[in-house]
Amino acid sequence: MAGIGFNLRKLTDRDDFLGGLMAYGYSALISSGPWIFTIVALTGTLFFGSFFVDFNKQAAFRIIIIYNFAFSLLLSGPVVMICTRWLADQIYKKDVTGVPGMLIAALGLLFITNMFLVIPFYLFATDLDLVVRFMAIANYFLITGIWLVGVFLTALKDYHPIIRAFAFGMAIGLGCVLMLAGKFGVAGMLAGFNFGLAYILFALLARILAEYPYPARRPFAFMRYFKRYWELALGGFVANMAAWIDKFIMWFSPHREVVAGNMIHFPNYDGAMFLAYLTIIPSMAAFVVTIETSFFERYVRFYQDISEHAPRSRIMRNHQSLLDTVQEQGRNFLILQGAFTLMVISMAPTIFEWLGINYLQMGIFRLGVLGAFFHVMSLFLFITLSYFDFRKPTLYLQLTFLVSNCVFTLISMNYGYQFYGYGYFLATVVTFLATFFTTIYLINELPYQTFVKQNASVSSAPE
Image (cartoon, rainbow, N blue to C red):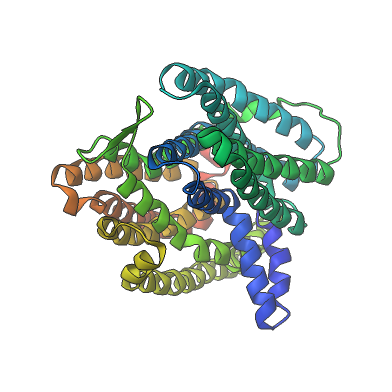
C-alpha cells in the first residue's frame, strides 16, 4: 500500500525546502489523519468549550471521546486488517471493481456488530442526559467509519482531497462547537465534534467512490479472508489491545476518576500518553515518503525476478539489496526518531509550561515518549514482516506485546505513582528486541523461506 508514498516522494524531487516540507506534511496527515484530527479537534473543543461549560462537563465530554476512540479501534481492528489485505490483493490483481461493494458491506458489518455493545452501554450503563447519550452513540459510529475508510487513504493517488477533508472537518467541528456549546453544553460539544467527523467521513467516502466508480458487486467477497487470514484478523485486535491494555489497567489504579456513573479513567495517565504518542508523527511521515517506498522497490524487484526465473546470482544480489535497504532505512529512522525523542524529553518542562499541563504527568510523559520510540520501531518491523506474509510470527510478537504490557503495568501500578509508565516502556523494549531479532533472522533466511517454507509444492510434499 505504498502507492501514495511515491506521489508524495515526487515533491521531494523538487530539491527545495518547500517541496520536502509539503511532502512530509501531507504524509503526516495521511498516515496519522484520524489520530491527528482527534487530538487536535479534541484539544480545541476542550479549550473553547471551557468558556461555556464547567470542569465536570468537560470531563464527561473527554471521557466519551476516549472511550469511543479506544473501543472503536479495538472492535474494528479485525475488519480493518482483513479489508486492507483484500484491497491490497485486488490492487495487485488489477481488479478493483469489487471495492465499492466491499466498502459498503464492511461498514454495515462494523455498524451492526458494534451496535450490540455501544448502544446498550450508553443507554443503560451511563448516567448521561438522553441527548448526550445519542450524540455519544453517533460519535462512536462516525469514528468507526473513519477507521475503515482509512484503509483506502494510502491507496488513493490524489492526496489533496484527503488533506482538504481533514482540514475542513477540523474547521467545521471547532466552529460548530463554538456555536453550540454555550447553549447545549456537553450535547452541543459532541454535536459540533460530530459535524466535523461526519464531514471527514462522507468527504472521504465520496473520494473513494469517485476513485472506484463501479457498481456495488460481490459485497461480501472479502468475508472468506477471515478464514484464510485469521492471523491478520486476530492480530488486528491483539495489536490494538496491546497498545491500550496499560490504559485500561491504569483506569483501576487508586488515582482513577469516575465520570457519568460507570465511566472510569485516569486523566493524568491518559493525557500524558496521548501527548507522548504525538511524538511518533515525524517518523510516520518519513515512513510513508521514503522508508516504505525504498523498501517496496527492492521488495518488488526481489519477487519479480523470482517469478521470472532469474538466475540465482541475481536473486542473491536482490536479497542483499533488500537487506541493505532495511538496514539503511532502519538507521535513518533511528537517527530521526531518536533525536526527536531526546529533544522532546529534554524540553518536557518547557512543553508542559507552554501547554499548561499538570506537572504530575511529566514522569509518565517521558516514559511514554521513550515507549513510543520503541513502539513505533516495532510497528515498522511488523509492517516489514507483513510484506513477506509472516503472519504467525507477527501474531506471536503482538501477543508478546500484549502480555508484557499487561504484566509490567500491573507490577508498576502496585509500586505507586512514581512507577506509573514503566510498564508500557518496558513492554515496548521487550517487544522491540523480540521483533528485531525475529525480523533479522527471517529476512536473512528469506530465500529459504521463499523457495522452501512458503513453497506449497515443497512444504506439502510427503516426507
